Length: 56
Image (cartoon, rainbow, N blue to C red; front, side, top):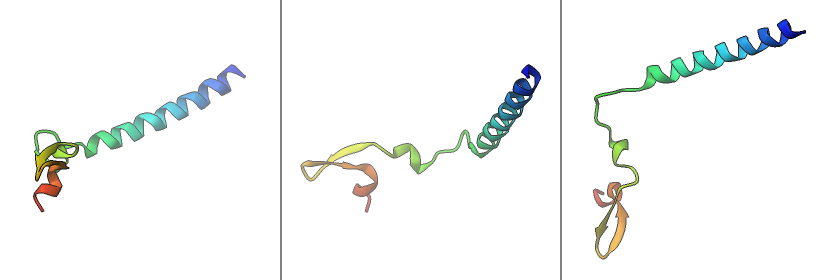
């Protein structure tokens, strides 16, 4: 009984670790991205606007 539970937990944890490794491979470090500016608001024409909308 305990071994079955432990075996199932190990399988689930292994899958979780594999998914995390896959996500980590997608990360790009050291490279600038426009996504870094998401959420930054500036005042333009007397209103606060997202920076990406000011550029258009």
